[in-house]
Image (cartoon, rainbow, N blue to C red; front, side):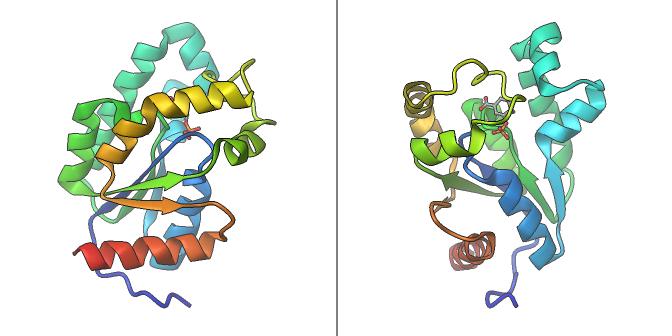
Length: 178
Ligand code: S3P
């Protein structure tokens, strides 16, 4: 099925705002290209035996951010992983450096309207809880835009596309980049 054969055997880090499709694309990509998925939020939840919301509440955001950096260092010693990063990962320069050491950084994008539609029924995103409105999403997205774009080797919009199409586009761009 995959028109574009995988040549690259490093890690692929999917970054982007909450609700841009990182988890869905990571799962599809793993299936098509025989890679292992690392869902960062899930790993951190497992390690702490606590939901992301409870980690923020009981241990604080800084603790969570340190957990992210620690996990990225571990992933950096591995290969052939497709990593669904938490939305805040590219905001630390050391995280970006860590990702670039072992792989390619792929920024997934979507409009604030689409993000709202995708996140509105969830309750495990402490930064948006009680704040699920367009203005909040637009504001936070605006604050992060520059860091996201600076971190990215490749940018792919997930707007009105099927997962398979997005996976093909990512692989084509990675192979083209070399
Ligand atoms: C966050 C995004 C979340 C999660 C945490 C913080 C952020 O991950 O890591 O709630 O700072 O943008 P997703 O982007 O997978 O929702």
